Image 1: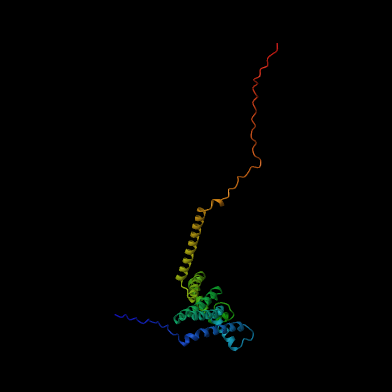
Image 2: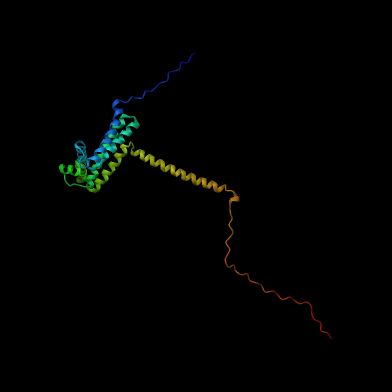
Length: 239
């Protein structure tokens, strides 16, 4: 009987589309271009295009527009590292949500107390408040939850959105912290056990016995009085 060897199965890695290979580099270029727009847009003569982009983005999102290139560059680098097209959509979406939540937070800090879109746009262009997008949503949160409740909700959602943009889930954070605490407890336990073993098997020659401290003025020992010697020689009177 002759045994036949089955051919080894080779798994093909899915090939990425042309757009998936080009998009990260386009995002990096866009992030660098936006940085140039934000740096030069505040000048006296920024130019037509750079000035329009600066006013338009700051009018929409306020000061949070400055974090757009940061998220763009981060998503591009993460996409190039992960090599997965499905991750791009999720991270890009959460990056956009993070920008909106940041603009809402700025509106909570500097509220307009109205829903006037023109005022929101002009205030956002002056880097005051959250622009039109953050202004509308932020004022709605203030109307529903007041200032304290809006702070709690927006900051909690912003932290969660930034973590998901980085590809980190709350479960991962919990497992990571738990693993670190467990490893720290284990190291402390091992250190205590090693110290106990070292003390148990200590070389007796290494034990140094310190002499007792002497008193500066030692107590005087009482001197006993000597007994008088009993004289056995009895004098004989001469006749």
